[in-house]
Amino acid sequence: MAAARVVSVSSDAEHAFSKPVRDAIELVEGIGVRGDAHAGVTVRHRSRLARTPSAPNLRQVHLLHAELFDRLGAAGFTVGPGQLGENITTLGLDLLALPVGTRLGIGEAVVTLTGLRNPCAQIDGLAPGLLGQVVFRDDEGQTVRLAGVMGIVSTSGTVRPGDAVTVELPDGEPHALAPV
Figure 1 (cartoon, rainbow, N blue to C red):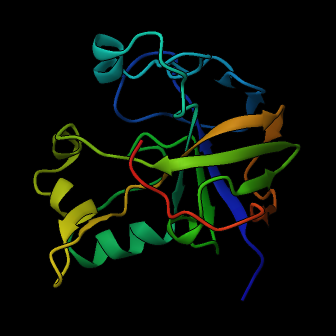
Figure 2: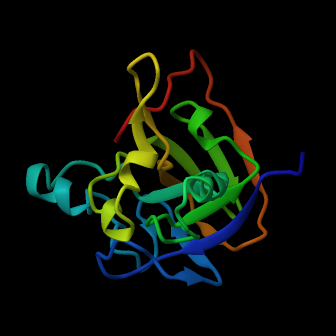
């Protein structure tokens, strides 16, 4: 299997659902993606601003596995990089299986994973029925979330398509990612 890598990067200064693809993005330690609407020390997602405006921003960077696009395509949905609002689209790494606190070396930057993306009904604005493809209950009744992972920037740096992604697992007992 090929090494994990970045296939696309996206950002948007506006609070739009999808983000335009860029040639590169700059990650800023403790802030997020420079110029992105979700960058900041405290929460920036609109749903969280109303409830807890001074809470720490655990959603500075949204990462999504490109393999999801194939799964969605098989279900009849055409989705590409940036359309689900992610900042970094990866290939060759099971992001959803990594524990909280995993450090991802991405280009010049390091992102520490904080949790799973908890997608909302806005996804159905992209394509009706899409939300049910990325959040659903499995045969045991457990909620499955496939819409990527969230993280904070631990080391600043530039990220570009083609950059390698390295994984450093946290010390101690691993804790599964949960929605943030």
